[in-house]
Figure 1 (cartoon, rainbow, N blue to C red):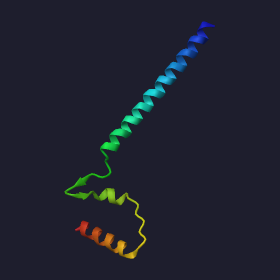
Figure 2: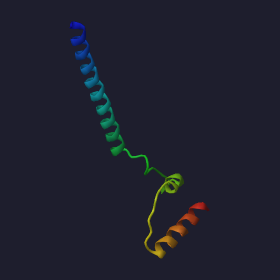
Figure 3: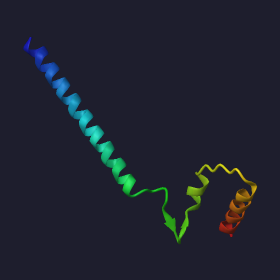
Figure 4: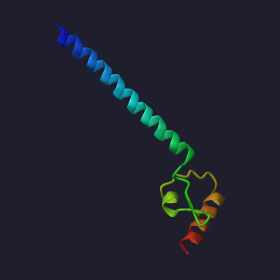
Length: 77
C-alpha cells in the first residue's frame, strides 16, 4: 500500500514539476523572441530577401502592386 501512495505522490510531483519547467521555458523563450525578433533583421538598411519571400501580402489596389513590383525589381539589381 505504501508503494502505491509513494508512486502516486512521485508521479504527481514530477508531472507538475515537468509542466512547470516546460511552461516556464516556453514563456522565457517567447519573451526573448518578443524583445529580440528575428524576422525583422536588416542588412544594409533593407529587409533580407528571404524574409520578403516568406511574407504574405494582400494588396487591394493596383498601384500598390505596381509599387511593390518596382521595388522587387530594384532589389534584384
